[in-house]
Image 1 (cartoon, rainbow, N blue to C red):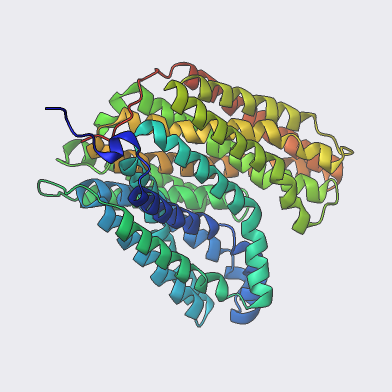
Image 2: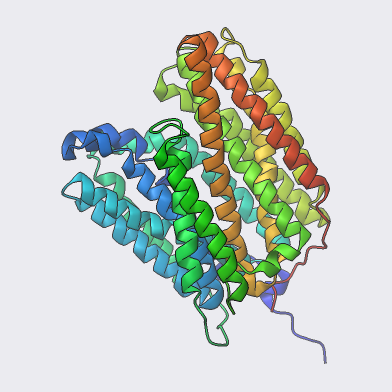
Length: 474
């Protein structure tokens, strides 16, 4: 008797799956946007609540909470019901958003931003995990191209949306507006996601969780403050580095003896998984170099207003989205992916070489075109990094693996910001704040990123091609 073929085996994008994917992507969009919309409203917040010296902590608290919580959320989704864990993260994020909008003073707002960031860590990792259990590996690249569009819209549109809401409705609506979108995310997830039940008793790695959080928070603070608020050789920075190293050493010791570690060492025994961490690190380092320092060049060397400098990143966003869409079609048609991170790393190198050639007199529109190869390279790297992670680990480790990938990218952002910030400030210190010194600082950032691109290209060449499946793991 012929076997009955389930609808999801012939067309993975059933109506239910589409609703579930929409819910997951809504959650990811919320987590991404809140990293960018608040920055433009900081002056309004400081004017209303006071404490202008503390207003940068509104952003720092959110970023710290995301960095510290992603791995924990990922592991929880492996041990418990993925759907339930994701819904919990949405609830935490919405609670934090409402409390931020109601904050009576700066201290309360910073604390509530940390709560919101904890929820956002679960949104970002949980959304990726939801997508991976909803559609098979070949089709998941289609979703990745949509996430690239979300990232691009967040980079360009986030500050614009934040400024509009702050001016038109007041800064508190930056947080209130999350609620209706969060409710749509909850509805889509509840209706569209059917997560398989977990078997066996969950074992939570409390010791590893505490040590990893301490290490990540200490490291993130050190890289955020070094060279700006404190000197690299200051007791504060050296102390934070010592705490980070000590906590990480103790974490490694604890993990070897834990029956169900927060970061299973078995994941790193797979070559592709380890190489994917290098690719993810390179992606975020390049993102920092592009998103943070190209606008500074546009503003300080070419006199472009801050409100328009972000628009000059549109070529980068367009390149990233176009390549993610095209590479998604290529993977679905051929089942191959290995060549794409190689091309992506090479494109990053070409783009950064173009940045290195920019001068103090280069027209801003011409300068913005270096974003095309950079965007193309970034599009190849991020999409395939997530794909490689997914197919390199067992289903039971998917959440932990995606959390580790997110943590690696976070470390890339921290190290990139610290290193590039020092190089940039060093150029300004030597030559003043004129266009020539600003350009020299950008050149130093580009040269350092070229080294990272070479490292990424080397890692990409050692990635193994693995046959992709059209079916979900059972």
